[in-house]
Image (cartoon, rainbow over all chains, first blue to last red; front, top):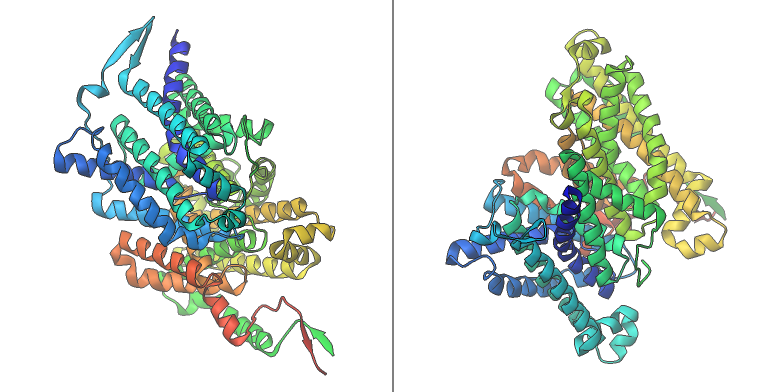
Length: 287
Length: 331
């Protein structure tokens, strides 16, 4: 029963990792950009949420009303102001610029909020649980998993059912021809980044309710998201959810064997999948 | 018409470089303790930057996980001296050999990832190393351990002699690293590497085995990085997983050095290291703001002058201190 519990809890944890990964997956799919600052942006949204909660006394989940549009606006500005200038055949500029951005964000947060761990208080939501059979499921993890499914379904819908999604797919397939068809790729890329950071905002708030965070933990979140993307297969959003779940389950099973092994077990699961199926479980596009 | 590699500037630079090297070798007799320590640190950062530049600037292998080998080398120094009874100098070489061995399976795995995903993959490996060493209780687990006094004393008699030896080792390894990179780039393999850097598809159609060339670069770089790591921890005398596998200390700074100095040239990391330490010595009091300034400078350089400071100098004056390219001259 303990093991079933570990697997169920790991699956729910996977929802959070899928949210970390969805933004990464989206921008890679649209503009082949890998954002090294992604993890720090997740932590940045958590701090933004904390600030909103402190200033207004809102419930952390209601703070999403402010944080999501704010992050989307930051994403749009970031892409148009900086990242669009780095895109091209050369791999180095986007990588190094986002790496520099990561260092700036991390130290900026350190300067403003200090290194003390912070947490958002969500009241009864943090501890509430309900029984299913012999298992006790926390309301927050179940809610997180539900949000992950909803976000991925939403992204999927935007991608394949709307005019904006068609524009995303068009620039992803061929930038020049999309440009000839009257799409402004700079604008489209910025919209994709805005969407990615809106998802990041949701991930950041849920992370901040679930665990404590400090400015240095962004890198770890980037790695979890990245592992979920690679396990699931590049460019496949539902695959990313599966990747997050596999990672979450590997971690909870590792923690069950020895608490010190939690994170390591997740990395090892990732390396095993990389060894036996380097393209991921459900690949859509080649890297 | 005559095809040459060397130039007047390169000859002058070689002569000045040799003189500078002699001055640096005798530094323990003219420099104070603090200066000696700082110079030792500068050399080790220069070595790390040159190695990262060889991978990223020439082989197109952008790694954000070189701290894996710095930390690995440091831990191997501790393990080989404490458990195997090696002298520290032998242990440094041992750390290099073990670094090369461990990098082979690592390369086989992460070479499956392309481009930016390769970069994050290297970071995962560094995390795996960090978490694994934190599990080894014989080496102090998560809190780390210190190098026993007995081993430190075995290096040389007296503190001054030990500090001088540690300085010479740092200088020696750095000169070796730069010499290896220079000779490697002038060799057949180096020519293949430069071809890959300029155009991978064209290089492969000329019969260059791209995978093998990159693999060789990765293994050599890892071995030398592990040796530098062992030296860094011979100076620090205390190791812990979080410090030894720190992405900020061993990779972020190194990347900034190379980007600001000029990626893809041997001179770039040298200029970058000098700029980095000049900034650090003047802005260190600012703490985290200093790191933010570095980040902003690196982003500006990448966007406005992607070839870095040396790239600007080279474009303006056509200088090349380490002669790698060929020129046609009228005779």
